[in-house]
Each structure stands twice: as structure tokens, then as C-alpha cells.
Image 1 (cartoon, rainbow, N blue to C red):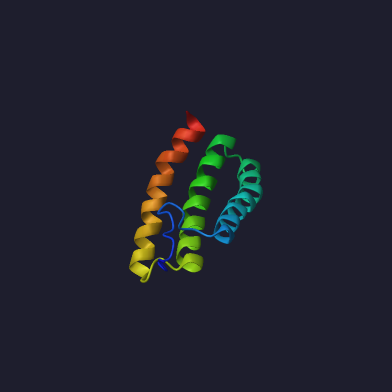
Image 2: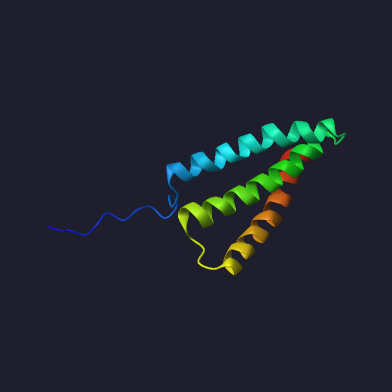
Length: 98
């Protein structure tokens, strides 16, 4: 009889609590700041682009650093935030404007 633990899949490294917090953060961020920017005269597509870029990069960094505890130093967290921000800039541009 083998008593070795069942290996978890490599892709499923998050908890459902983290996913719920992440998506709730994005939803609340969009519900508050997108209308605020459109009232201030910013185009709705540009407001969606800016808000989603910021919300996704900050929210995902927050979940990975604070809840999952994956980053050990502030330098790793800053590099993660910067790389997520650049990636979100590109992906959100394609989603919103194309």
C-alpha cells in the first residue's frame, strides 16, 4: 500500500477564497471608479481600460502577496506588480479597443 499523497495539479495553485476576493475587488473597483471617470469627462472605453488595468494588476498582486503568501520580499512583490501592470496594459488594450 502506498501512502504517498496525491499530487495536486500544477495549474490549480489558488484557493477559492482568493479567487472570490480578486473578482470581488475588480467588480467593486469597476462599479466605483468607471462611472466616476465618465462623470469627469473621460471616454467610457478609456475609463474601462484604465480601471481594469489598475484593478487587475493591484488586485492580483494583493491576492498573491497577502493571501497566498507567494512573494517573500518587497522586491519580488514590486517586480510582480510591474510585470502584471505591463501585461495588463497590453491585454486590456486588446480586449477593450479591438
